[in-house]
Image 1 (cartoon, rainbow, N blue to C red):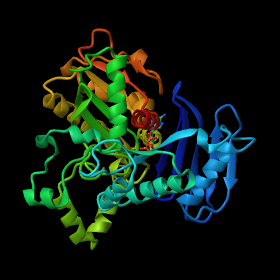
Image 2: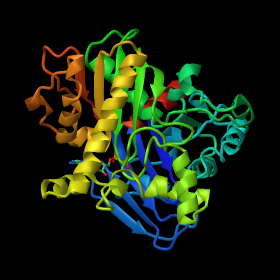
Image 3: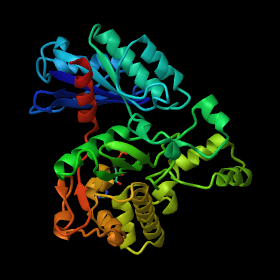
Image 4: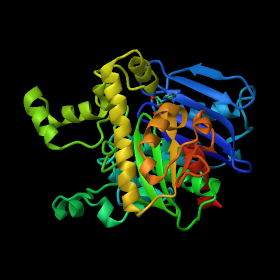
Length: 398
Ligand code: ADP
């Protein structure tokens, strides 16, 4: 069975065609600058040369049509006809309290995605455009939505409620949702299997450290807490997002800098995090580490603050679960940055965490990086959100 996985942003569309018989990627690619001048499709069929096409894509509809043409092309295509695609799995960012788990798309589900536009204003409209474009291009092919928020829907009330007047929860569904849910679900499940832990009782902390960063605690693969909130701004320090912050900072900044709340939130989302802390050096850890190693103090502070916040959250989540059996690292920084993993583990010796430095000296492969006598297993596990979406899609269409 072949499943197409789509991740639509406001001006981009990422896709993967996966053969679910052996979970191999048949082709993947990216449409960029949708709706903007200079649209381009980059198509990478496995085992064949990359194909790049610069052609106007006024909307996601044209982008999908170009993807379909690339997938079925005589030269760089990988299938004869789009009827070979059994189903399409779509990443949808915010399901609010309306869509709590992966589901087949129908008119009601599309309306629920629309109802969540104000919760996910940057992503949900694009996600819906992707769904509608697929419905037009492949009538009759089932579409499935997989939500970034569904893993967090298992959190208990005490973890997801904000301590603000209850009427706001009732009126507007303001609560903590926890994003990167597909990644946390995938990695926590895989780590239980990979490290041979108890599938029902294993207490796992997943550190998804990418440009966006979040951390989750789960027992037997069920989320107990997750660091992102109503939006992805809460929690860890990220590439450009502040993470946790006294909300009074917003009022103070607005008054002092003559900004409105939207401008201030833009600063907290796009100009903060390690980028902001380092005085604007970079949001990329490679640049920051190079600057720190050349003696730049702000780069050092940014990296130290980042690691400190992760260590604090691991302590909090260990307390939330009354212990921890495994800590996993994933995403860009988590998978590639052995120095950051080492620094984090150095702050966890009180838990009996013992890193195997030689095992840690690797990038992007699944392996146990703790010493055999470590009380907690530390696991490096590359995330694969596309595969997770494809698996959910298969489960719903079979
Ligand atoms: P996202 O999906 O949130 O955009 P990724 O998970 O792809 O982000 O992570 C991207 C980040 O990973 C980069 O900004 C960079 O900080 C970090 N990264 C990637 N490769 C390395 C590396 N070799 N060493 C350190 N950090 C890295």
